[in-house]
Amino acid sequence: MKKKSGSLEYLIGLMMITILCILVLFGYRMHVIKTTKNYVEDGLAASNLAAAVIDLKEYGATNRIFVDGFSKAYGRYKEALADNLNLDADFMPEDDRLICGRVIVEEFAVYEVSEDEIAVTSLDENGIISKKVYPDMAGRMTTPDGALITTATIYSRIGFLLTGYSDATYYVHKENSVDITD
Image 1 (cartoon, rainbow, N blue to C red):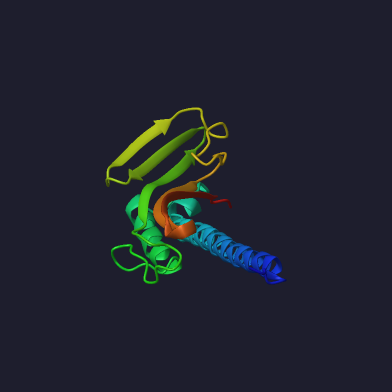
Image 2: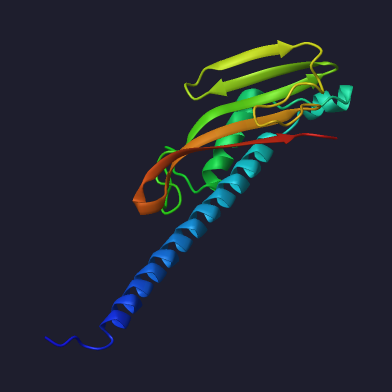
C-alpha cells in the first residue's frame, strides 16, 4: 500500500485551521466580556449619579450637602439603572446577549457627612433598610469599594449572570461609588 504524498501536510493544515478558529472564537468572547464590563460599569456609575440629587433647601440654608431623601434617591437609581442597562420592569435584560439573567441590586447606600459624623442609610438585596451613624469618621471611613467618604456619597453593588466561555454562566458583581461635591 502506497502512502500519498502530502497527507501529513494536509493534516497539519487542518489542525492549524482548527486552532485558528478556536482562537478567533476565544477572542470574540473576550471582546464581548470586556464590552459587557464597560457597559455595566458606565451604566452603574450613571445610575449612581442619577441618585445623587441634593436637597437644595438644606444646601441653601446651611451649605451642607445632603441627598434629597433616601427613597427618592433609590427610585431615581432604579429607574436610571433599568434605562442604562436596558432592563424591563422586573430587572430582566431586554436583550440577553450581554447579561443573561435578572439584575439584583445587592446593596444601595447613601452616606451623608455632617461635620465629623457619617450617617449611612442602606438597603440590602432583601429590601431591608438600615440606618447607622458613625461619629468622628468623616475622612477616615470608606465605602465597600474603597472610596474615601469626605462628602455625601452614593454606593451601589449589583449582581447578575454573565455568559462566559462555552456558554457557561457566571454570577458576577459590580460596584461603584460617586461622591457629591460643591
